[in-house]
Image 1 (cartoon, rainbow, N blue to C red):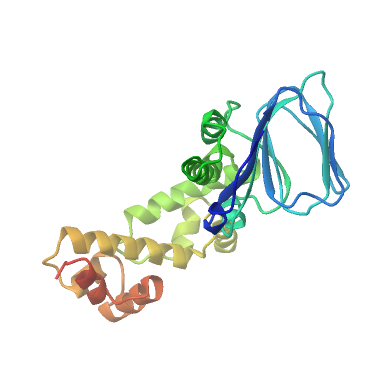
Image 2 (tube, rainbow, N blue to C red; image 1 turned 45 degrees about the vertical axis):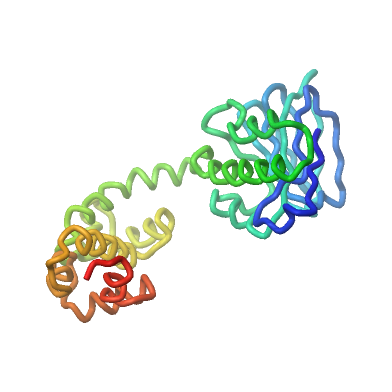
Length: 269
């Protein structure tokens, strides 16, 4: 176990407070919770995690994450219970977990059971507490939390919905240059327009029209780079906007600047 010195790293958006590994994790009870975020990865054996009044079994390939000050306990239920963990804090800790889809204490199943690479690197760092080592721990902690998003598969029903909506997203990509109606998009996967809107909200977290406009603005930026001789009204036409005025209004709403300012900022005039 390493207790990380935080006198200087506390100023960082993310910093580790303890890092450790147990060949056999013993029973731990925390009726008042723990002051930091904690991530435990199970490497071998099984244990029981209790969060408030909910009990669950955790085994190899699982991680369990506890949020600060949430009552919990965990105890082995097999002869050996091997795990690694990191405790951490920082003003971006909650946001990074939220980005990975983790908004409360609980258990998640990893795509691969191997020890998470950044956590393994942290365990292999020198055990000292000089600033250089603690800064490296913070860098690896950032990588660890960023990697969680791709290491944690979506819930089964969400994964099915992502597969189902994919043909619609591909259809949009192919036809950004023209008007796209909700009716046309819903017919791509044979659902009602109302259901398609709900599907968009659950999978891409946008309304269809908002998603389409974002893709059009991204395409317009590419065209401004690749075809610098084109006028804004031509860019608008190529990206499916009715006219240049509407294109400019949407561009400013989504980017915070006018197309002319974007071109000037990137030296595209």
